[in-house]
Amino acid sequence: MFEIPTIETARLRLTTLAGRHFDDYAAMLADPESTRWIGDGEPLDRAAAWRSLAFLLGHWQLRGCGMWALELKSTGEFVGRAGLMNPEGWPDLELGWMLKPQHRHHGYATEAGQAALDFAWSRLHAPRVISLVRIGNEASDRVADRLGGEHIDDMTFYGTQNHVFAYYPPQREPRRAWA
Image 1 (cartoon, one colour):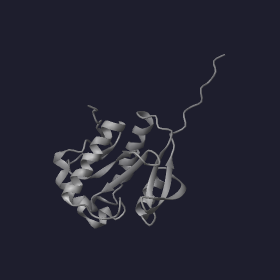
Image 2 (spheres, rainbow, N blue to C red):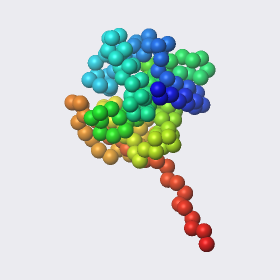
Image 3 (cartoon, helix red, strand yellow):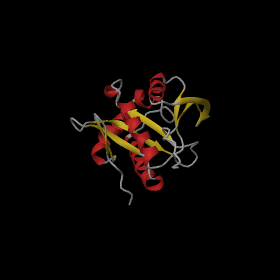
Image 4 (cartoon, rainbow, N blue to C red):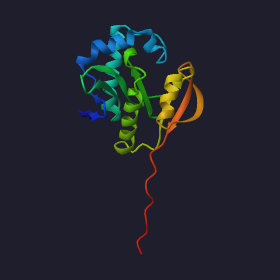
């Protein structure tokens, strides 16, 4: 069984999605404003939210990466999810995020996204990560930009038009030859 790492940032704990998160997770996925830019754009009922949670946990087992639950370190409150996905049929390793409405516009997506990118570079040794941002989702465009994403293309994916942002690992110091 793959152990999902816990990562702490200045304000957040990125931790394993668990049963204790399910009521908040299901409520977030039932909110039309939260799901507007995700999947088919439709809210999910509790059964579909359960399948979503199971999918995200299974992704860790199959790919060695996935989405984390985002908790405020100060209170333990669930504020959303963020992480890396690359299920079968995906164009590349993708960084994504989703926050409960009351926790948007506080910089949590950027903070969690940076931690996920650091994981991609240090643990997965990924050569590149992308974000697919549905055209019109200006808030997520800004998050991708703050994370250093380069808008490299637009593509239709699962029936929606998306901006494709690419992130690349930080440059390493060149190796010096010893004389």
